[in-house]
Length: 426
Ligand code: CMC
Image (cartoon, rainbow, N blue to C red; front, side, top):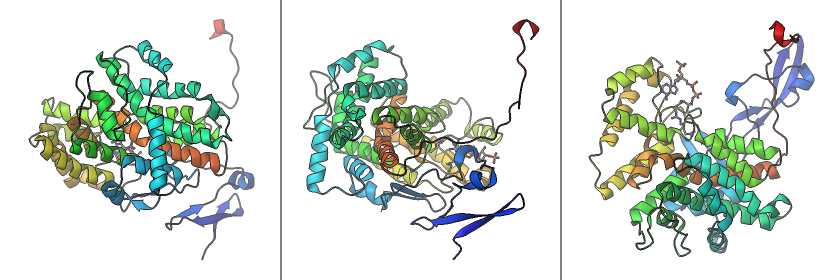
């Protein structure tokens, strides 16, 4: 068995250790590369770089496999709740009954926002971007939990973890209520995580909202399918920020900002806009596909850095959309028809086949949210609520594992040395 890779460089042979991951992928250790050669690796987008070890989530993009702590996503989707999934990702094992009860109680005890925080919502314009409001308010939670600045206080950390998972849902619902000019509806400790969120979103003071079982189930599924996805852009952001020993609240707030972009979590909004434009006959599907192939635009919700086949989350969501639509009698939804037509065309077209472009999680997730009456500008906020356990798990792994400030190198292409020119001579 070969344990080292040999790199021939500048007339010298350098041995680089090779590690096996538990699932068999090989990893070449280049930590001594610069010391031994003076050279660094060039890898824009870090598609060939493993900046850390991790035991949280496994993705095999060629085979379309996703597992949380070793458990297949299909099993998680069938058997688990979002809260149980959050515990699994964060604490590394399935909770027993007592652990589950204690965790749920901690979430309930942390569901209220400090009344002082409510004034933050007043300061934002009513048409403020919900992702910006969410990241700002989550970041400001540290002002109300200064005890976690003591990084040795594990009890405070457990409370902070529960506070984020619980309060992010309250913050999301309150920012929606504020934007709509509706009174805040406080969380109800008797309700489950998802039921409670829908209550805070849609109850009115004289009429409590009682979501259907199907709606609660669909929201649970949406959230748990988004709960982690190994070293994606936002999880990597959280890990980078955390590597500077930045507190948990601020680190996950940076994850929210990273998620916002339309190549990442913002894609769920972009998919929906794309489908709506097509439904409104802004252009025909063949005209749109032609523009995609001419690289004037992208087929949003398609393609993935890691998956080179159907994203397993997209498959599960697609089935769930149909189940939910049956319940809500929305079978003839024009957007669903367009999504199915686009999917069929793309799966048969050489442009997409040759580039391994398949539907990703965002292709169908908006359909679930729409059926739940979540407004479009909240779609990426919903993704953030779902992704929170993953960000927390990555932050903890960085804190407890091999601590190393993330500080990459570069391939410098600027001036070697330049003269300063006085302003009147430029
Ligand atoms: N539509 C049309 N062409 C595409 C698409 C797409 N959605 N995605 C990739 N391509 C083409 C791209 O133009 C390139 O073609 P060529 O080889 O001729 O230059 C080739 O496929 C490879 O693309 P890439 O940009 O180098 O691949 P990547 O791994 O950097 O991109 C991606 C991954 C997700 C950014 C990209 O597929 C994309 O922009 N998809 C649309 C946005 C989207 O749905 N994002 C959600 C991702 S999943 C959820 C999440 O991470 O949050």
